[in-house]
Image (cartoon, rainbow, N blue to C red; front, side):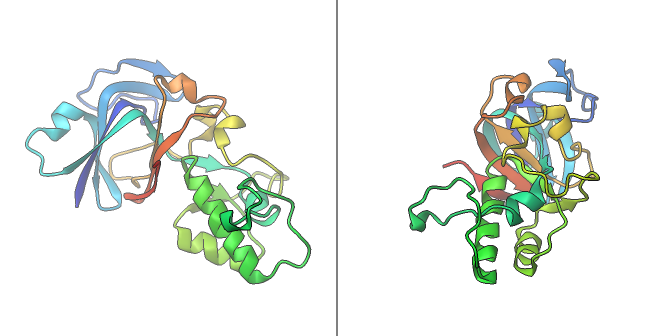
Amino acid sequence: MLTLHRAELLCPGDGTSPAGSSAAGSSAAGAVLVDGAVLVDGAAVAAIGPFAELAAGSPARVREWPGVLVPGLLNRHGAWLLEGVYHPDPREGIGEQPLPPADGLTDGQWGGSARRGLQRLLGHGVTALTGPFTRAAVRTAVGRSGLRTAPAAPGTATAPGPLDPLTADPLAAALHRPLTVGGAADFAVFAARTVEELDGGGAVCLATVLDGRLLHRRR
């Protein structure tokens, strides 16, 4: 199925302008296109460019997003966030922020915590995270989530860090990989008026798409 994702601002993150387009400006993460779009065919990016050009005569379903569309983010603290802290179930009535894990958590509880943590990472535009993961229940949760894994930098595998990568790194450093034609359709949309507003974190993630699938949508 073809889906055309339209955004007020589009930053593919590769430092260049999409073919045939005129960039509205640039950022540390690359060129920025006003009223841009990403055409997704299944799990891959089929085209990137101005919405008017990609939409002309296209049978694609259109999703329109306010804000800024950027490549998916990489969280470099994945091992700690899924195995070093506990993500409460809302039904427990103890909030949703990660907590120090209680002694004696079962594999089932670790798996549930990991699933909730992964969903919260998607809610921050994360499409990849670092391991390794030592608990089988956590590895299973990560594998089923579809999020991509990446090796951690030496000495950082279990370092603590935030759910939102943009609170720790500027956008250019937090991107997992650029959006390219033929590449994986992994991206996020944030409620922001400029790309620069994303630096420092805190911007609301409206949607996260992984392999062309809409896995998070702000309600």
